[in-house]
Image (cartoon, rainbow, N blue to C red; front, top):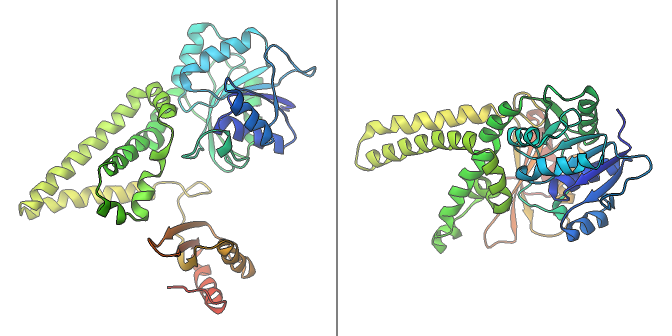
Length: 362
């Protein structure tokens, strides 16, 4: 299935990123959004050309990507199908069961529609945060119904391939329960932790380190966007949050007992911490499958332009691939620590090379 022309309806982070990825592969992309400013910015970024509703290119549109909030997917699909806008349709909302059910209720043609969801994103939103490589190596769920035509599924699979993602076919209800665990409930939990900082003292904020930044990073996302996501997957998210709340309540009770001198309560806290380690270790690595055990090389780096480029140049010179990088700034000082995750057998050669070139490696 070849995609020559694709329409993207909704030029936010995901829609514009998909458009940029398709443009990189030579696909003609038409852009539409109720926010004309968003369309103009996406166009200026090279994501495609603005689409005038009611008009179609001579070659037609092979696939329409509906990149709008979950509550609006079905109505947008119905409107596009009424005008015969495209041969096939998909959406990229992070909730799947509700849009599919609503589309069936509205009488949409489910033969030409395959719901999908790229498991990629950023804490930033809007076309200005879009990247053509946002989906590279990331899972992209597709949830075809029994009515979906094989060609419709093939079109969505081709979209996923062009964006560099990995297709994962899954039932819509299973998808929603899964993302409640790995995405939606974690966002609410991060927001709950971040909310404690709103009334925190200046002393506490002055002591904030990388740990609190890691835990609360996603809490900086658009609340309006997330309200739409959470309302579309409310029951599965509530179940996960209730389980988390039970764990937290038990931990709080144990800590209260410890504060009162009950040494036996340490076992409950230890059990939760060990369960956390076990869960963390099950998160797949960046290439899928079990997470790899990397060695971490710490390097003191100045807060000046070009320092990261110089650091990576050393890695290139000695042939060491950096699997991951993390920066931690030193409060009040013009420097920080770069933590480079590398294969264990590469740690010593990289450390030696950095020291030889004048880098401070603790």
